[in-house]
Amino acid sequence: MSFAALNLSSWLVQQCNFMGLKCPTPIQKNCIPKILAGDDCIGCAKTGSGKTLAFALPILQKLSEDPYGIFALVLTPTRELAFQIADQFSAIGKSIGLKKCVIVGGMDMVVQGLELSKHPHIVVATPGRLADHLESCNTFSLKQIKFLVLDEADRLLEGHFDDQLKTIFEALPKRKQMLLFSATMTDTLDKVKHIASSKAFIWESKDEFGVATVKELDQRYVLCPSDVRDSFLVEAIRTFRASNKDGSIMIFTDTCKHCQVLSMTLNDVGFNNVALHAMIKQKDRLAALTQFKSNHAKILIATDVAARGLDIPTVELVINHIIPNVTKEYIHRVGRTARAGKNGMAITLITPHDIKLLHAIENAIGTKLTEYKVNDKEIVTILTQISVAKREAEMKLDEMDFYGKKMINKRKKLILEGKDPDEIEEILEQKKRDKLKKKQKTDENLHYRNKI
Image 1 (cartoon, one colour):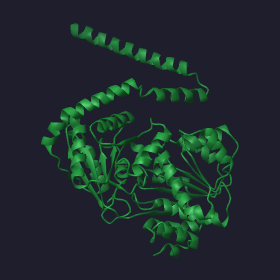
Image 2 (tube, rainbow, N blue to C red):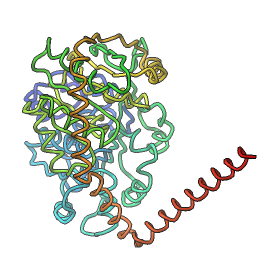
Image 3 (tube, one colour):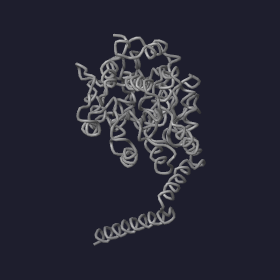
Image 4 (cartoon, rainbow, N blue to C red):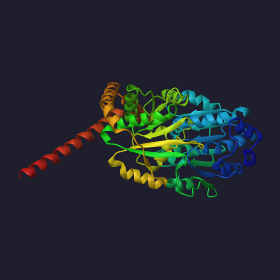
């Protein structure tokens, strides 16, 4: 089947051909006609299956028939994904003079406010920053939107964004088309159905073997002691590089601090890389992603801010430095490679304490991970070098006051909420003192009983 068979306009079919897209993917084939027919749509398919085009193409067709701004609102949980979606809209809608804007945190609110006041056709936003604009200014309105898209809908609806979504939904018209997409929607499907209309078209990719990841993905594990995890990581990279000199590598870890320390450590031992996490300024996050996408840096070390939706064709290896506690986050992480029919590999470093997590992931994805062999003798030779580099990185980070910016932002937020940050800080400190006194008293009583 071609894109023309989906009742898309000839100019959209030409744009798809120009971008090298000849045939629609299953989610596009099933969802596009329903969206064009005016139905609400819930789409769930594996990572790399073309979900963005499944909603972008019909939205652009409807926009070309009745152009006005603000025509569609796309909400997404991460800033990087917002920019990527906006770029895809721009690429396809260039021939109709599409105007879009991206509303995310970490950027100048005044500039964003001016962009919104110009009524762009497409607004792509993270919920927090858009809610801030709705509460602080009245230079734009969302009352005329035709489409509301929730990309990575399960993440948006799992509870973290409830307050912001309430603010946004109050600013939207009652009549609109709801389009909800994700790769993992099982645990939030009831909530998703509640938001969409009762007649919503639901399409979920079915795999006869119950596998949640694509067949082109080679999934491996490396068993290692927790105290030498970083040395095993370095050796896994070296082993992969022995057979693949050019493929890009994404490494996922659990916290911003671990991400930054790991990035500094690997840079110090000769593995040029860039880091991406929430404690980095937004312009630097975009610069790091650009370096990685353009192959100037072949290794990206990130937290889960980069786990969802990012489409970087050159990624051939994903490494889980820390195994995620939630199965669906594993699915999203490893989905950064083996996209659109290409091959890829995912390696997860696990300690003996992680065996239960590994089994839970294997049961959820319907696939058994196989061992990735690394040379233990080589690890012994690099152990001291890696340990020293990591300690130096930790010391540098302490000198930089890594969490200073976080504390400043926390105080700003309290002030905007009309609260006194010093008063809140004093209350928290008092709670700590009370907790410490209680512990001391418990210890004293225990000591007294033992003495008796």
